[in-house]
Image (cartoon, rainbow, N blue to C red):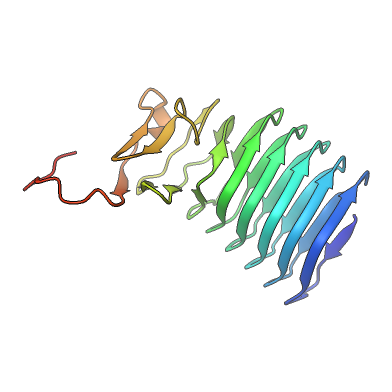
Length: 212
């Protein structure tokens, strides 16, 4: 691995890392908490970022591409924060998550050969904000939240379990959060589930008893 943080290592700060051509992982983090990483360019490695039992870490401004396996692999790791993440053209997964309450903001996962987003198990509380995800697999029922900070959010209160080619982020996605409306593709059976829907800044439309 290019960089490994492990064995109960806390409160490290890393900035402006470039890693390429490694047979291992560009940034591996295991049993380590509360680290801050700002700026990682990783390409042509085996993996971009790999987590194993690592919690409460923060990653900003991460560009991952052309890895032989996965861009972001979060394994049994919870409460991590990812902001401004790009994971493209990886040979297996763009983003693979196993763990609770991980949050992704301004995240793009596209053109990955197997899945752009794969949710393995125990991923309740995972959220994506202002993000683009295409090919997806939610293999085990999960409570997920999807948010567009300009217009609204959908927070599933019953678990979803689905797969498809276009999850989030454009006009033909299975989940769309748009101005004054939220849509999910009911023909994808695993997405047809109860949710709390919030629309932002809609103002007073004169409705006495709104109906959904």
